[in-house]
Amino acid sequence: MTPEARSPAGSLRTGVAQAVLSEIALLLENLAATGQAGAIDLRSLPLTEADRAELEEHLGRGEVEARLAVVGASEVWETAYAGVWWIRHLGAEGEIASETIAVTRVPEILMTHPADVEAAAARLQELIMLRRESAIGEETGNG
Amino acid sequence: MAEEQTLGELLARYGISRRALLKYATYIASLMALPPAASTAMAEALAKARRQSVIWLSFQECTGCTESLTRSFNPTLENLIFNLISLDYHHTLQAASGTAAEAARLTAMKENAGKYLLVVDGSVSLAENGAYSTIAGITNLQMLKETAEGALAVISVGTCAAFGGIPHAKPNPTGAVPVSEVITDKPIINISGCPPIAEAMAGTLAYLIAFGKPPELDHLNRPKAFFGESIHDRCYRRPFYERGMFAKSFDDEGARQGWCLYELGCKGPVTYNACATLKWNGGVSFPIQSGHACLGCSEPNFWDKGGFYRPLSTATGTSGAWIGGAALAGAAVGAASAAMLRARKKSSTGEK
Ligand code: SF4
Image 1: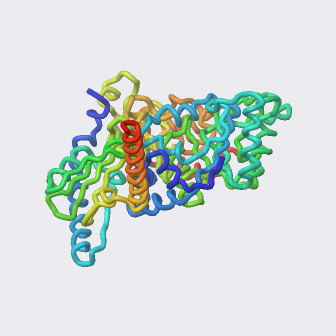
Image 2: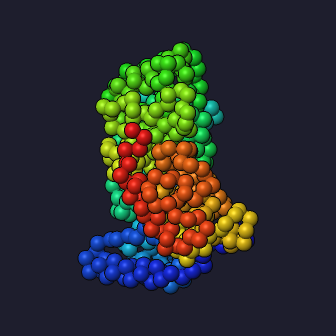
Image 3: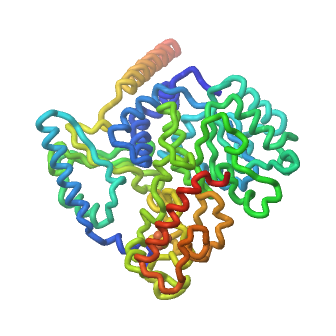
């Protein structure tokens, strides 16, 4: 048996999941009423494995799931409650580096940053230029 | 060297997107228990910041601190910190050696005067005018003084730099002292631990770079985000402690059942660090989870506290809270620990 399995806390449902659900409900009502987003950092809470599983089970899966390849993997999904998103960032060894419940219409991590748009536009222009140059090169070579 | 470009521009050149920066900031904010909304502000601030020049000096140390920072970082999320800093001098990691290495330090000091961060691991020898430990013919004492002069702030990494650590242990033949006893006119942040937790070093650096000021510190100048709670506060064996269920030897039934290690000398109740939550080796485990009591390595004088395997109440003997060893019940132990905590707060100046 691993020390973790011996941990008295590992398989225990402590009731924290219930408390988190109530907080999510409040944030969701606020989002509906005012449009203001909110978030809960799950890592800051004393969640046991069982608590986390309970929360995940209650929230379920909704219409959107995304896998990100951003300095390692991330998993983002909208739960069965529209506007309640589960964001799980994984570290180098696949361990959970951070885990957040975001109550919002679109999580920020899914949106493209304006600076990235600008950089992408420049890169695409570069590609077009390069292709044009190589096409001219080929034409001259053929002619 | 410090660069004119912003970190956002620099990272874009390396193909690191703003989304990656946001993920990194989310990770750091979560490590430091900042509100989730802080991650956006941190990502934006990091993007606007300049790459931070860092000069790292290693004195009387074992290189464990550097190992901790570099070994635990695989080339993904956790090593992004190395893109945020310009490590201008680190005699273990840099390619240059000899005169070229010292020239790199002097150049960085000149070019970034008043702006560079000085990271120190290892204690400073004062005996015989510092002759016990020299680098390139310069004593640690002299190098610390001259390098600290133009530094923005000093980060003492590891218990040796922060509190004197093992070189400072009795009988301290080299007259080893912490950095804070030599440098008194600069802000000093202590990230203690033997070695310190990599995330505590990276988190503190990222916070400094993003917000241009140190995170909130405790009475020993350690970031509260990582040193705000004791090991005991967050120990998963705590329910056993509360019920008075203690392992009496490393191979008894209690030890096998994962009971509390208090009677085997655990210093968790008086040790402030994040081992119980962040753990080690990418979150795999920490000493108590691996079956060994906490040694208290992030606290001043941990080496001279009367024995790693003697229970706290008998080991320190300074709090007046001495209680009989064998018949400890959770409540009694709790009272003793509380008394020691009070004692700890009173002697909060550490080693001075
Ligand atoms: S005394 Fe040590 S093992 Fe026991 S609960 Fe406290 S930190 Fe954990």
